[in-house]
Image (tube, rainbow, N blue to C red; front, side):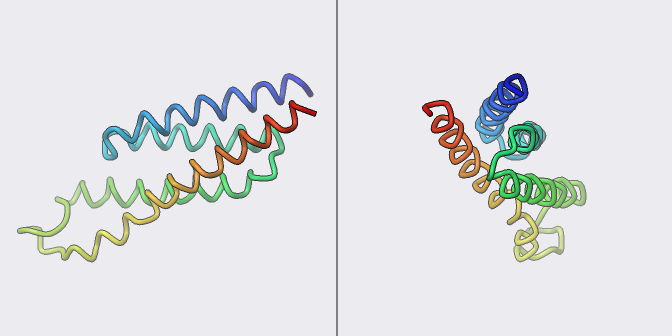
Length: 119
C-alpha cells in the first residue's frame, strides 16, 4: 500500500510540472498539458484521493478543449478570411477551465498528501 501512495505522489508531482511547462506555448504545449493532466488524474485515482473526481473532470475538459483547439487550427483558425466568427472561440473554453481546475485540484491533492503524512 505504501508503494501505491508513493507512486501516486510521484505521478501528481510530475503531472504538475508537465502542466506548468506546457503553458509556455498553449498550442504546441497542449500535448504536454494533456499528458500532465492525465498523470495527475491517474495519481489521484491510485492514491484514492478525495479530489480524484475533480481531477478526472479536469482531464476530460482538457481533452475536449484540446480537441477543439487542434480541430480549429486544422481548418484554418478563426476570424479574418476564414469565414468563421470569433464566437467559435467559445469551443476552446474547456481547455483553460480544465487546466485551472487541474491546478486547483493538484494543490488540494498536495495539501491532502502533506496533512496525511504529518499525522
